[in-house]
Image (cartoon, rainbow, N blue to C red):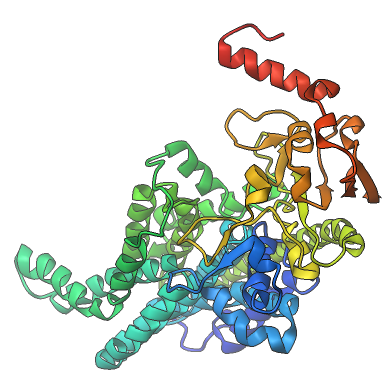
Length: 549
């Protein structure tokens, strides 16, 4: 490959792969808490998991029951690591390894398929920081990083003829992947089957006839993938249990799917991110139009299989949103990894392509590093409120959001979870979906402000979301159930709504209040609050079909 060179080039060496792994981790070195949207909420669950046996009030607020489910990656890893490093550092160390493992998986797959790492593979490296990772789907991201490396091992064992060893090894590998996150196990199955299909077809290249050349390879590819099948029984037991909730729906949402394909590395700056995605599509297009670049049949078929899965996947699976979005960056990565320079491409042309890929990777890494530093500063600013929060407080939090999908997300939506991590305080941002996670909320006194998304507030009622306007939340939340209110970058609101709330910390619009329980909640009449009353009148008029007042 790469011009027929017998000596590895600089991007094909082990030292380069090690350097890529180190550089990929740089954006996560500075932040104390990786600024991933859902991660603080997950960290709160880990704190309940680790402390509910020794902190009695946690059992008044949450149910925590160990179950065998396909979503236990960090939940299991944190058990041995937290006593050594503490919760926050242990989570940081685990999360820090995910992009590096992903990048290593990309390069290892490329090497196994092409013989050496092609120059084009470097363009896939920025996808280690994909949109699903930024969203904080950490169990999913860990499973995908492990699945990529497992697929590379699958290819290597086939290439070296160790098929029996592969069959033995991939029984526990499949089980580990399923436990980490079901999605990783499923994707490994698709990749392994497509690669084995090509291998079986090539073994019968000389055989004639449709059945011998095409039907038989499908059969034997399925047989060789049987070692990956045992988790299917666990999946059936998990998802047919009576305690499992969550709907599957929003099929063939074409607008959303097109959006996911433009957001594969969405982070902070829309022009920068869109331009970066354009580079990825340009490289994929060169594989079709450029006579010096070609697609490999092996990974090309894998990419097509993933594309079919992406099209067929609904947006919501068993109550978990963004199912199809999660696959998009990895589908694109496999397609890029299937590219390689043709044998006739000049040494200078190949080196130029590699330098371009390296520059693209370094620029994206620098941008992500700056972005994470800025997010870390906003985290530090908001978390100062916790210095004034007593341990074990019953806290209700309201985080400001907008009704339109801004490209730059605040990543504060689950920062209330840090109140549990650092102060063992109640937090109303936890997900409560029986069977999907180990934790469910049981604090009935909180009523409709018990769990996610009650922590998200807006300036007005959003037409397509369940989020409440901040004015409604400040009046309606059950004050007798809580001791403190934490406002995190909320939209502007009428300060009269702070009646009965004693400020203990402020920074701009953000504030922490102690609730004055001596004030009779009955005195907080709806009619007292102009903004709230106006919203309610508009809603009432809309429901009754009357003109707006």
